[in-house]
Length: 324
Image (tube, rainbow, N blue to C red):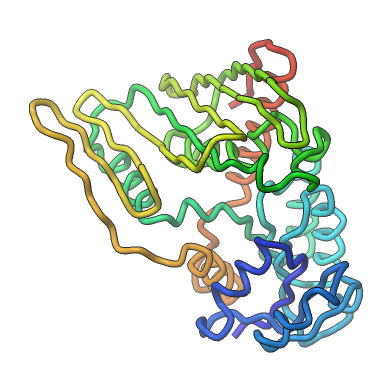
């Protein structure tokens, strides 16, 4: 059992706790760190761990072997570097960093300390996304030609006044909070990107933003791609891969739709799983040496570098070329 501290007990930090506490035999939370502990006493008591406000208290406790960071990304680098120095295993929620330089520094700190680094891209563990990648890798769609996607989740209405309203913390409209999930899915399924183009149309600045970010990609293997995120429209998710023998799309967490010539669309319902629990247990397995964490640090760095290129393309309107 991996004794772990959860750092940051906002909405997502609570989701992590509820995914594993009392349910997993691989990982458990034994301490919570948050700047406002008084609001969390009942939650912490319910889940059987104590609270503190200072990460240094966790660093000094030899019984705590790992940390899960569910904090704003501007805090990730100092927290990752401090945790690595203390010899703690580290799981960090996305966005890992907003630029490649910070991401590379954190990866280097973990490598030098010899600690595992897991980065949270939980939608990779969705049944529909696992099935979509499996179909692509098996060649079921033939020669790949194009990938497109969309993720909107109405977060401008639901997160007003948080870090998501800040252009410094959340650049590119909805790209940082939502579109990054699609970008990571694209890279996981298709591979490195060669060129990025972008368009950001702002109808109303934050708070309660009204903006649309659209991105066009040219991958190193010749596949094209495009995705959009709208901060003020209800939840919608899709990742759709097109090949010369068919296409397949993830249309929800547990649904995949297949399109083939001369046949009606085939809609496949998949058994649901707890993807947050799966990714945290995969982290615990990596700490135990059972298997490498499924998202490698090379992939993490590639996602951050491509994200940085996307933001530059959106802000400048220029085509950004990458060293893939």
